[in-house]
Length: 322
Image (cartoon, rainbow, N blue to C red; front, side, top):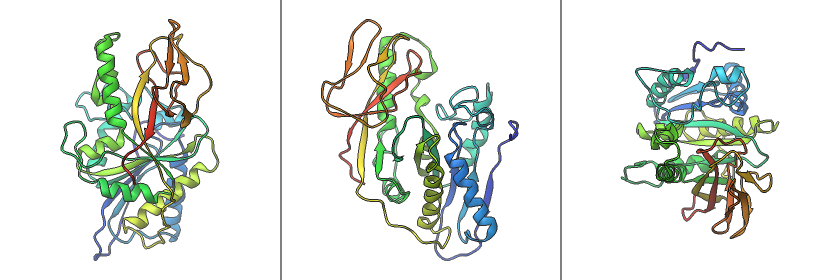
């Protein structure tokens, strides 16, 4: 067990000049039951200590466990979801607020983020990237090409985008329904997690979902991605493996909320199960059907979602290649 009263980071700074290299931060266990990233980070730290990896330029900060309270109890959250409404506050109210006060400062001090996660259902690893370059109000951005290069090299073939627009649309629907006025998940900032916060501070990065929580291969996915990132950014002189083509690029098009406890799925869906147009996905408490509006995929189905919260997402092929 580690202390719940502090947040630990390991920072290594290279001493060589020449090729410019950024400041990288690598995070694990933002959700306490997602430990593939933690194990991958610790493996890389051992190799750095043994001299098998040398950080020679730029700097890298490793945070193996971002949420110690959740990690110590092997559960997703301490007191709430750290990867929602991630922001510093002068009056922290809970465990995650206290962590955010430190983590947000650390993120803002860096240029690039590799955030390592895992997921509940069986499935292949995937990487989540941000928007195209834009000057909009939702998620203005200017590093899409750099993010694409990183997403291409972390070692997976499935690339997902569109989190913030899909989430913002879901917020608008919740407000229109008016079922839970004033609830935190009706605030668009509730969709801001680690990578979204990083982009808001002028940086960039990706979230890598390394596989199912208990998949013994998931820590290897995290380890490979860290090495690839160090190589790609020039922090260490280690070989860079080629991208894992061909890529499957998907866009989160819509979020569907659970309205009542009696809302139920018609089958045990897993992320990226294919959907035919009109296929029955779920049945509401009032007996109404929830069907796929068009052919695509179901993503992040959550059988334990609370009423008024996101239940699952619908995805389609992205028009933006990697």
